[in-house]
Length: 461
Image 1 (cartoon, rainbow, N blue to C red):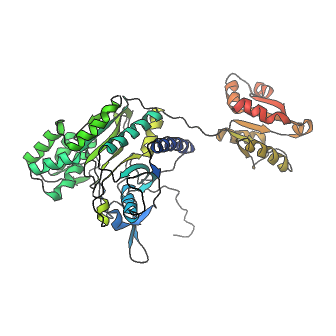
Image 2 (image 1 turned 135 degrees about the horizontal axis):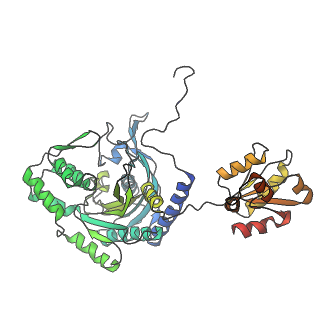
Image 3 (image 1 turned 180 degrees about the horizontal axis):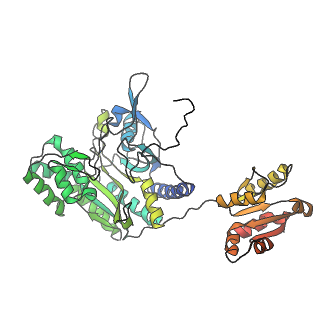
């Protein structure tokens, strides 16, 4: 770096910082999800952010980066490591490695960040938090339906009504039967499924282009097509519009769902999921409520969760085929939706700030702060300027609920002044002059020092 050249404070493309309110909402959402999973007998595990690259495999839906869609580096022993791009591939490694020790069936849930080295765009980040719930060792498709019911219960607890989302489902098997009929080559199948998976983004004509020669997006980037024949493409498009295709897995799945007729489930053959490791039932959760996008256009919010059956993934590690199924929720995308539709409010602890007005009184301020904290309240002592005006401005920016003020008069009289910032803001709306504001001291009152905790409980609960 050149001498005296200043560093530019800039986020890497495709990454973002999170605000306190978003983090608080995320924690509430995670608690809802955790409780639902544990009520259905799922247990929590964690796997590391890094895995050996070959253990992850190349299952990403969009391999449009030089490193195959993942962030990778070579360790000092020559082996390649990659940051996980989902939580399912690491789970397959975990199950294969610990197969003789884990109970079977094995039902687990997990939260964690995942990373994808893909082209960033609006709402498309290279790092995001996922939630997964998976069941290993169960071939009965009731468990696939159970996962979908768990997600429906989660959305209900968050506050989404049955007409604001739907859980769509289909099966890879009915697609495999179609591919045999129209003689699609095995090597073409992943690209065909990826093209169909883009239906909600590019529309039916976009899918048609991707199945034929290719498509240029709005940015000018060209995506190569599958180069199918016209009659093959037409039969695929006909299949998409036909909702009568079924198989044994779908029949069993729907038998379970008959017990939950109040929940918004819908068969949709266009649900294929982009990841290549799916082998049977697949499902997707879509928010049907509309939002305004970056261009001011009203659009359906779209997918926030998805999953399916992957009965052959664990066999990659030398095991026999092990039945497995799971579902994932994009936590960050779900939180964005929650904020857009105002489903959950930030629920931070009220903050109390102790003004630091008199040098040499730190012991007095600390003793009060400890009493307040012992009652379970968040409390902070201001350590900057002794100027009360500056401290009140800081407290306002911090969105504090109360400011405790202890000046010379308060020390002499064994009292405490409390400024209720929330009430003060309301009172100040009707005050016209600075003199009137100073006289009224909006929202401020004096109490005996011994009555502090009782007063806090009265104000904050």
